[in-house]
Amino acid sequence: MAKKVPLPTTPPRERVFLVGVDIHGSHTSGYHYGRTHLLSLDDSLAELALLADTAGLEVVGELTQKLDHPDPGTFIGSGKVTELKALAEETLAQVVIFDNELSPRHQRELERLLGSHIRILDRTALILDIFAQHAHTSDGMLQVELAQYEYYLPRLTGAWTHLARQAGGGGGRSGTVGGVGLRGPGETQLEVDRRNIRSRIAHLKRDLEKVRAHRTRSRLQRKRSRIPIVALVGYTNAGKSTLLNRVAKADIYTADKLFATLDPTTRRVELPGGYQALFTDTVGFIQKLPTTLVAAFRATLEEITEADLLLHVVDISHLNASNQAEAVHQTLAEIGAGHIPMITALNKIDRLADPQAARAAIQHYPQSVAISARTGDGIPDMLASLRGALYDTYTPVLVRLPYQQGALISLFHEAGQIERVEHERGSVLMGGRIPGRLVAQFNAWQVKPGELQEEEHEHKS
Image (cartoon, rainbow, N blue to C red; front, side):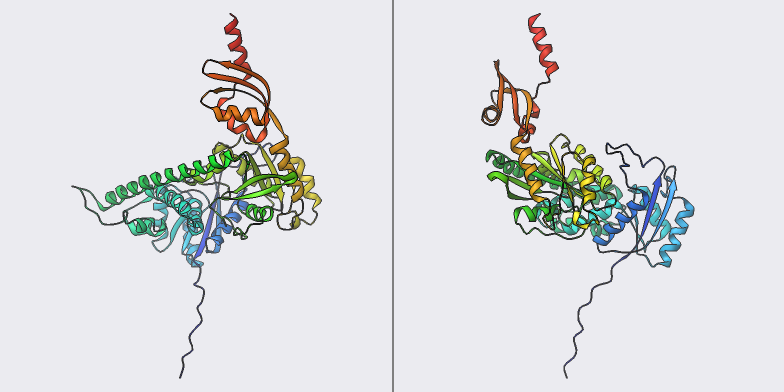
C-alpha cells in the first residue's frame, strides 16, 4: 500500500520583539524643505518592522522608552529590561531587535540579563542580514561579508559559533577564519579568532580594491563613448528598479520589499530627439544607514559619485516622503555626491487618491516631475527633463588644465562653448560654458574667480 508523502511546509519564522528608544535631542528639524528630517520614534519602529519582515522574521510586539541618554550598561533603563524580559517570554520571542545601534557592552549585558535563549540584534545587524540574503553577485557578497566582519569583530566574545552563524558563513567559504589554528604562547582561542578575522578583513579589502579598479575601467570606457551616465538614487523601495525596467524595457528583479536589489545594473535608455543615456540602478538608501555598509559598499557607491546626473526617485505616496528624501540627501553628501546635478522623480502618483497632490508637492522639490513607474504616467516629461539637463543646460566654468589632461582639453573644445583660452607654463586656462553633465569631470581643476583676480593682481604688482 502506497504511503502518502506529506507536502513540504514553510518553516516557521523566528519571532522577534522590537525595542525603540527616543534619545532626547536626537530628533531635529531644519531641512531646507522645512520639515523634520528624522523619522519619529513610531515611524522608525514601523520601518524596523518592515525590515524584520524582509528578513523573514515575525514581529510579535514592541517596547518603547524615552531617555535623556542611554544607560551605560543596558542602553534602556533597568526597569525596562525587566519589562522586556517578561514580554519576550510571554510572546515566545526568540530575538530582540533594537532600533538603535548597540555598543558591544550593551549587547553583552542585555544577553546576560535576558538569557542565552534570546538573541540580541540592533538595526545595523538586521540590515546586514538582509544584505547578506539579497547579495547575489560575487562583488555584492564580498562587500556584505566585509561589512559583517567589521561590525562583528568588536562584538566577538569567545563563542566563535555565534559570529560564524551571524556573519553569513564568509569564513566557512574561505577556510581561513574560524578554524582552530595554531596558537602562539599564551594565546587564547578568542585572540586566535580575532587575528584570523582581521586577516580575512584585509583579504576582502584587497579583493574589493580589484573590484574598484575593474569598475573604474568600465566607467572610463563608458565615458569615452561620450554617452552620459544617469545614476538612479533614492530611498529603498522607492521604485528605482521598476522605473529602470519601464524606461529601458529591462527585466530587473523588483519586489515590494526593502532592499529588493543590491547590485548596480546599467542599461541604455533612449531620450527624446534621438539622444541616449546610460542609467545605473544603485542600492537604496535608508534612515540610519550603517557606516560599516557605506564604507564596505564604496565600490558600488562610486557608481553614483562618477555619474553625470542623479535621478532621485521619491515615493511621493509615502507618509514620510520628505524625511526619506532628506535621508538620501544626507547619504549623498556623505559619499561625496552632493555636488552632482539632480532631477527628482516623484514616483507612485498612481497610489494617490488625488494625483494632483503630487504635482502640488513639486514646489517642495526643485527640478522635479511627477511620475508613475508602474503605469508610465509622466515618464515622457521626465525623459524630456533629463534630456534638457544632459544636453541643453550649459554651466559656466573656469578651469586650469595641465597639458597632461589632453582628453579634458579636447572635451572642452568639442562639447563646450569656449570664451577664454590662455596658454600658461605647463597648463592651459580655459573659461566658458559646458553641458551640466560634464561639470563633475572638471571639478578637480576649477579655478575660483576670486583666486584668478588675486593672481592677476600679484602679476601686475
